[in-house]
Length: 308
Image (tube, rainbow, N blue to C red; front, side):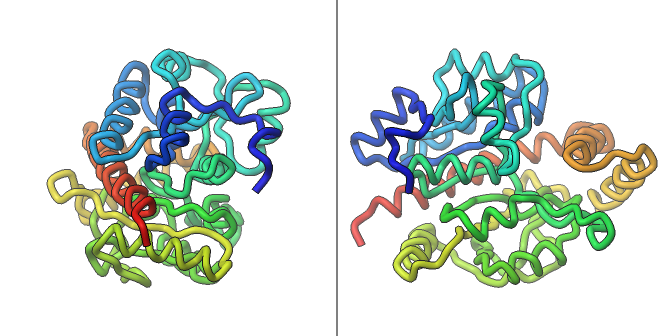
């Protein structure tokens, strides 16, 4: 790992204190703030997720790019400012360095958050759902950089599976090819974001945060590159079944294709359209699953701090 002294890292006071005390820390992405929902709901949701991490024994580190610096953890004022900022870049591996070099404001996707968390020595990251192989990728080659990042960067990522708008069988095949462990938490099926089951069996199952932490340690001991994807199903009470959500997804996908929407614009369009088609239920479910993932990530981060 690069010497921290030469990296453009700025730690919030809370995260700096946690690092000094050896406390468990959970990384959080910032695109949910800038590209996920409007102000002030975006800030309120981010605050709820951070509070959930704290309530379960870890310190939250929301990551964003501002003024040539990677901010590992945001103060209350910084979170408010980011939530109201305009022209915020949605950053992945390809454009992270450029945004830092030019002094832009950027929100981190799964891939960029993994990179920044690893630079800061944070091994666990909670998000909503990862990107993956898009429908029609055999001709468009539209595959999220999140998958390659999971194969390269040693961070355990807790998500509610991959977003159900994707080609989930191809996403699992890609992860298998890249050697990424896909661990379903507490069930055999691979979850599909808003739904607890995708109809696909997950390659691995674990029922305890301590086992996931032990697997993370073992990968490091074996010098295996890359991280782990922990697929944590949405809570039962917040689920939207596949039978209900899939027709809406097909409608949104057809509309996106007809409008010529592509690349980074696809996912925000689809999520916005699904909010409309489900009368807001998709967003309620999204918030519930992010909170659930925050709780599990805090448990894994705490287990990594326990003596072996």
